[in-house]
Image 1 (spheres, rainbow, N blue to C red):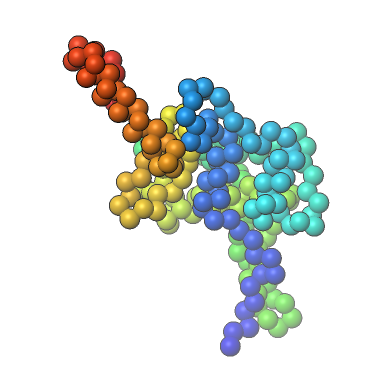
Image 2 (image 1 turned 180 degrees about the horizontal axis):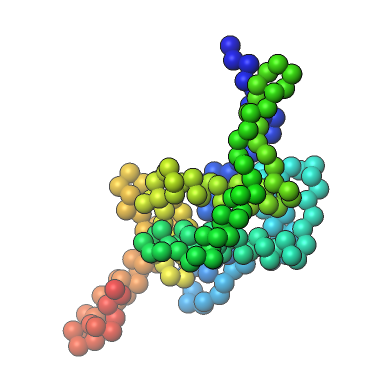
Length: 213
Ligand SMILES: [Zn+2]
């Protein structure tokens, strides 16, 4: 029998939720219209507080109150993480400022520590100075851990340019290109179908204009 107790409140976030944090800003999940409209789901500080609460990143009794400065920081960190994920997906070097910011966030928190609770040894973690820093560090950890020890080659950004939803491809073949086959996947298929019809109608002279890729 072990006398090691897990921390009383070992919260964390899985990769999918961490990627969904990036998707709180996106051009439109599964959007089928031609509008280039960006959806901001963290419009007010309370939206961010709710998101953290819903994902168990802050204690419900912490009474988290966020201001505009917090929201601005949350969005900056989100952009930095997005840049890192995009760079991996696009196989390019990330923006140095983004890496710097992600590291600053990670350094706010040392994930694991040994604590003596009377005679029992338990695993705890150090909290960052503020609940916001803590929440952001947990999100950053989930993503960076995947890059370091997971399967970064399975990170994807939806091939629909109007969507660009970030996700992890857990399909057996690892060839998933769209966030959702029913929306973005079918949309791409329909576009290819329309292009083929136009090609057939107008003849090969116009083929170069309508070929989707
Ligand atoms: Zn999509």
